[in-house]
Amino acid sequence: MLALPMTASQPAASSASPDVGFHAPALVASLLVPGLGHIVRKEFARGIAAGLSILAMFFGGLFIGGIDVIDSREDRIWFFGQALVGPIALGANHIHQTRYKVIDPTSRQVRSARPNELRNATTGVAVIAPAAIPTTRPVVKSIGRANELGTLIATLAGMLNLIVILDAGFPSIRPSRKTTAGGAQ
Image 1 (cartoon, rainbow, N blue to C red):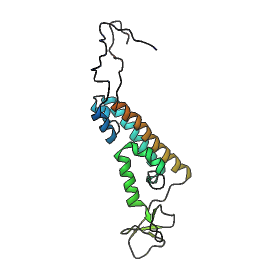
Image 2: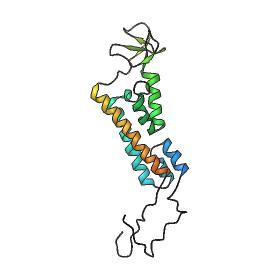
Image 3: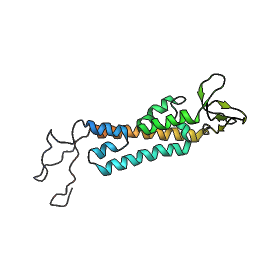
Image 4: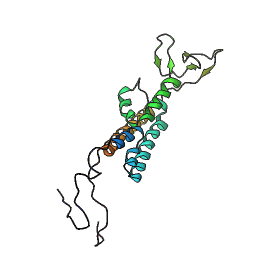
């Protein structure tokens, strides 16, 4: 294990250091918005970089596979990882379940629409042919690899956010980055 030599300009780390232990406000903030926990801890650049990276991955997954990649009913295991992104993932799932899925007319179960179906605008029931009632076009599950990649990327964003949440809530001692008199760090 490599030990850093102590100099007069570097005080010894004490147990009362603010960078050690449990930081509850940062943990809660990280659960709400990716990267916000580091911003609460006054690590602005780190929080912004982490937040933008996670959100770019999450929305990239949505862009590749469509909103159907966030699905707590049909892809429950994947959704557990995606939910780690926070309320953004939960909101995307809610919109997907309530606005874009159809209700099967025979079983009354909520499901993804088939390519030839429309969605009744008021009841959400699947309609085969355009009728006199107002309809909307539901989201059809994306095709093969696009759906798989979108699901995977959105789930990886959630898992990456778990690491950021733990780093914000349980900070550790980091060596000081101050330059010494000799110019070395």
